[in-house]
Image 1: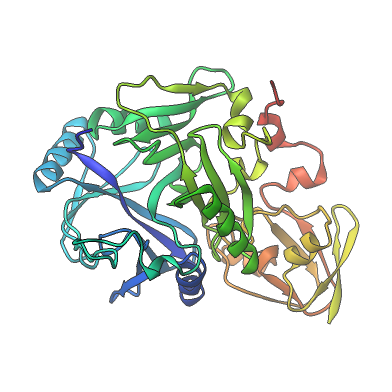
Image 2: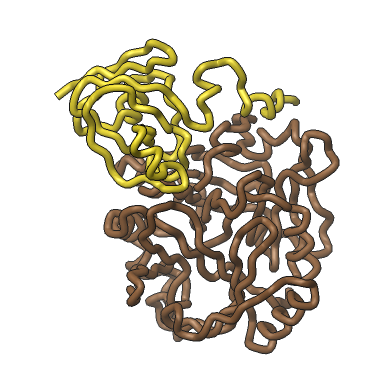
Length: 309
Length: 114
């Protein structure tokens, strides 16, 4: 399909309570590639198969959670077009100068009614995945380190006003609604899964009273076996696991949820169906949320609804 | 060195070594008292009020523990390490689920249907 606007979630900036402990976790256990540190003390990472300079940034803070999630757009013309669309819709935007984040061009930042800061950007230095573009091998040794996910896949964010958030993503940013879970009365959405391409989701939201909360950032694995291997590595390193390994009903993805050393949840994810923008939205009633979360166990784990950072 | 931790809400007691967090020791023993969440000081569900005892602590999120909390001994059990016998009560947002009076989470948890 032709993707001409928003392409993918391109970076998340997450707050950690102890920087070096977190660097060791993300680099040596999750197996991300460290690509830089800046004057603010932020540490930049990418997954081995990503080509842009970074996709996951951590900074030390006295509170956990997410600072912002950034989406890569096709080019500067689309950045201008999407910013104009946001303004016309009534959303205030600000431009963050090129270079504020390492190897990254100008970013357009705005705040959602859910309290989350979202960015759009068109330029980030391509550092490659360690494999030549001419006659490339299928993988490099960077993959064989820690859990070794392929890419930052999506994030699930918790906050209020999910109906308004859905309108902004579908009416302004070109996303479409792939799946949803209804509220108990069936009159609204408790959670939504949105795609800007043919991934089963690029971002998801769940209704929650506190604004700006992070449920998880998700990292893509290449197979179900790789998800199980991730679970082995988590246990070898006494990483606290929340749910899984199991398969979601929603998205059909295979999953483990676990927490980083500061209590930010992350996911190792594989699979999911491949929607198109013309497909009808799939709907889960609230009484089937348990199957949506954990299809084999049919269980709505309490922590899924209550534990966020 | 092993210390004894008493959860005043339930009267439950368990052993906790000085290098183990109050939460990790409870979970390791298979007890159910303090709610278990992220275990990294970030989510706040394991908040307890320390009533007595000596302890050390590690960094925890200010979203859940501010200066007044710290002064009053209201801390996250996953980041507290005992240096003597301790007693505490559960005050986190899942406190009611420990004490069993009201279960706010379960009240929205649907029955499993087929």
